[in-house]
Image: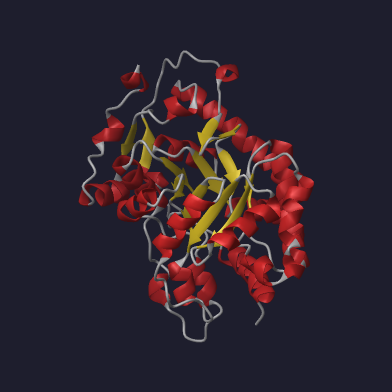
Length: 355
């Protein structure tokens, strides 16, 4: 099977397997503010990552590319939606284009239709410095995502089996290229121990890519003769992963992704410590069912609903929202306590604590 054929299979299986709302975000509750003293018109949703300013905390996370015409059309539509709603957009792994020049157009279309937008390049942790530079140059990218997908590779019939030297390669890339580097998981969550290695390596941010969204173990198992089902439930749920990384590194930039479904999930993720929130599966389903217009409408609704939620909470800015008191219960609370996190860090704080 060619790489392009595999890319198309991934899209088909991502849509068929869906997402199962196992993110742990249901265990997060806001402390209601009956006197918010705020108007929706006052809300400012700007956020900053690696020196880049986003007008919205929402971005289109990496999905695809390198699968011929079908992935060209998906990336084209995603970029049009990003341009219309003024949010960043990431492409899927560009290794396909680095190995087959015919696939470059499936990625380059993102910059072509969105010349002034924020675009993220993407490669795996096996990439060299030169490949990182080539991927960034291909898109005129503003940031590079390096994805970690050990479970996907292990379950993938033709996947990698050697993961040595990843931290050293990531550090070399972070030191050598001119754009910020973000390292992201692809749906199995990130521990605080992994985050420490990455921050020590010099990355600008980590994206926890938690369990609960698109499940690449299930996707790859559909492509195997002998399924490795024990990886289908493997990983750290998004809420727990985000909370343990943020509390361990409160001054570092952490992004959230993994099963984000609506504005409440976005708002909870920011309150847990995220500077921005990436959606992939939700946007792919929206595009598939409603086309470009439907996707644009859904993004606008998300942006508007986040502002309404912030109004109710009395939180005017992203920084204030990251200080909103929240209570953690259920499996998420249990996980964090077992991992040494005092959850009153979240429940007893107040946006005034930094005044």
